[in-house]
Image 1: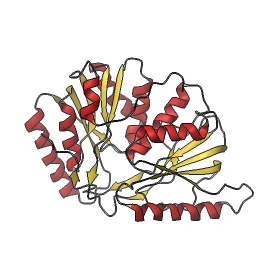
Image 2 (image 1 turned 90 degrees about the horizontal axis):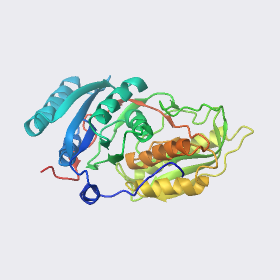
Image 3 (image 1 turned 90 degrees about the vertical axis):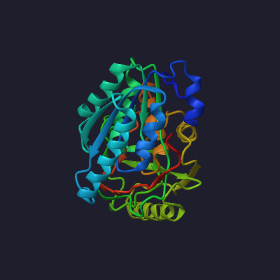
Image 4 (image 1 turned 120 degrees about the vertical axis):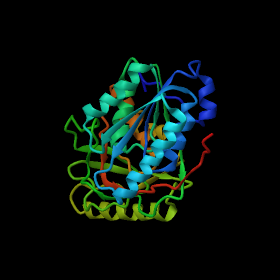
Length: 324
């Protein structure tokens, strides 16, 4: 797409040596109750001069006392290693777009080279963050990092809200018919009875991660079964949706998912919207495609999401990297 430079993904140890400004990055990251959130920060700190670390308050924590204790331990680890190098910030899960923009501005004001760590950021936060950073001319380089975890909780989130546009990615032009809906297959078990409302896709593309990301293949297929029931129920009307088509993609390869969406839509010329329920790298690709379409003057790409109101205390228990 025009006006959009997107480069392939890779391990941090491979990516950073390719930059001349290897120690001039500003980090935006989220400190949560997962061990991997702090481990990821420690890895990225090696290439940064300033870190803005945000604790996002869960409005309904599963265990308030334990949550506060775990978070206090996380901040103690950070203070012991990064004292004087970071700024501690707080935010609400449902912070407004303007409030999120204020955090992004802090990072850009320090450096034109920004490293956004989405490991523990909820999608409600990191989608608009990516959009703001890509669209800001002051940002010369943007790297988005993600650290995988292991041993995911059996139930990673609960009580999703109604499906609605993700802030920063609304449907403005009033289009109700779309060529495609792209659905990220993943962790959330859909609990809402209707998926599409007035937005009707002619075809449904399921982005199916393989090998499956946690919590595994069984849950992914349960997600698909739920989706098939919803589609079958909503196909009772006059407007039919074509049979579901599965696109097999890696759970961590952002470039592969981005390219797959580009191929299906003819580089964004055909209309689409996104439902990012899958792994964060897949969701990141959906976000980048929507931003790229906007910057290239293609039809807008709305993004819809059902925001959970509660996350598991131990979303993951371990990390796939070792902090050093």
